Image (cartoon, rainbow, N blue to C red; front, side, top):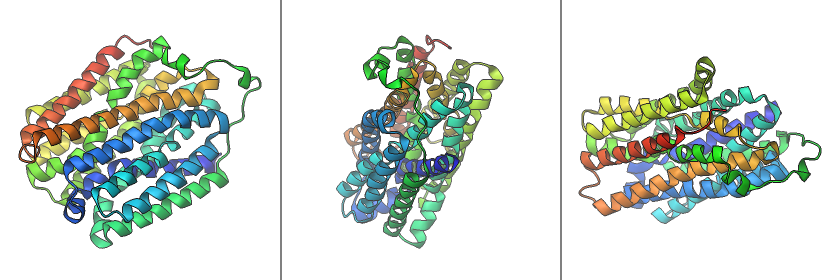
Length: 392
């Protein structure tokens, strides 16, 4: 099982890379394929929408067939296939199709790990194990920053995508060989309940709104808007953007590790989650108020957003308290569907705003400031609803 979990973490490294690397490729894809910021925002948003939609069949497959087949097969088809499509793309449409496939490939790996943690480890360990998985998996987030920028400079972006295809296929094969499914409880097949019973659980209904919005600022900024923002407002090149997004990626990884110990230290999941997300919202408000204060100031603020916006595993641990054991797979993937789907909706919304503003406006500090305001308001609304949730 330990070897299998190791390869699940490597699969999640790839999933993190898929969702975040477009920010670094913004300049080169614009020159070679004519891809605009709104094109790439749409492609990035589609990744999140496909990923979120896949959570429904992934949850069913985890409960029915287990994590080995679910994660191994989908990673091979979507991860390997998506990288091949990206490497051979000749237009923005090819990039969009590749991102959709990447959404399929990345959709099962984190939830497969969470499924194993929920069924085989004490509940008190869940937040720390879940956070550690994201923290170690954030190597993919980091690889999609400066390392990718240097690889593109040395080898080219198409060659880098071919290497990604090979890596995805190798990890998928290792999952099929080494991963073991958790044992099932006797009589579990006779248990009742389905996705609808989870969707009508009043405890989960107060958690879901924050789940929809909490990942939006970090994913949207790190995965896409950091590139256009620092390029158009501060004149940073591909290497400079890579360095800034690398620092944000490191902060996101550290935040993932920090939430579990902070929860145990304070003794309250809810307090830690509320504090982190309110901090994230106020940092977004600072960027809205001062969008052109200087590249270093903005880099520090988005790095802090990356740290405080990493509450996803802690909120998953809170939601897991209210899930029947035999619906673990569907419950986990349902929350993940809302979390990733919320990012997709945010990306599509910001893409629409960029198109509506036009090319002369969507490169100005005021436009990016309004994006940060949108991120802040959405998180504050989620926190207002979550404030009424039950601690245990």
